[in-house]
Image (cartoon, rainbow, N blue to C red):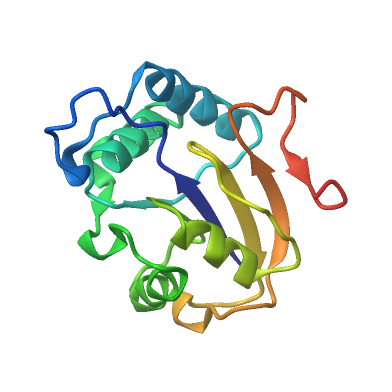
Length: 173
């Protein structure tokens, strides 16, 4: 069995319009939300074996903040250029090409690709992955190259504005 967690980057800053999209930093809300989501992931045993992130500043910053909360070594985060603004199909191709034994893979990246992929993978539908949202799904596969649309079992969905005290799980969404 494999578990995939999609993490959309936390809220970015638009204060300096001279900064290009790739280099936009997190805003104060994003810098608060990322560690909070990491703590929630830790509390719900959603600790990945491998973290792969878009190298865009807002995404890699989010991945690093989450990693700190999960006691995951930041030096082990893999930056994957192809995740930067990848569509859902492109994200799936990246996952399929990973040569890893990781049972739980977490990707940190961007919309709309992450929402599109989340909706294509399993038995739950979400309207949107807001910033710093976490979507998790399980698959009865042995290798990431076997991952394909459909067939996944929804595990949970959480976002910073969720005040329920627990992630949304099957039956909630």
